[in-house]
Length: 51
Image 1: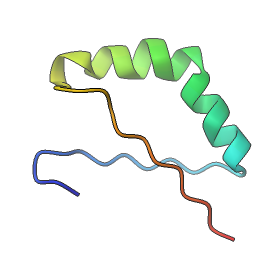
Image 2: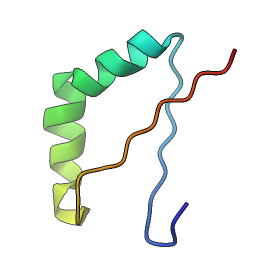
Image 3: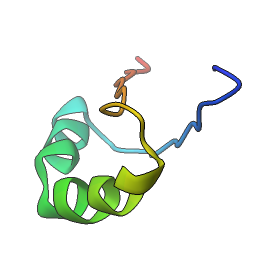
């Protein structure tokens, strides 16, 4: 993690659920829009799957 970065972890049962969240109105309109004043670029989103 970069010194200037913020890391947020979420837990989902499947990769599909994680991807659906990233496309949801909650994420795109509420979360990203709310953080927009603090972002200098588009957020870097990574999905990790533990098998």
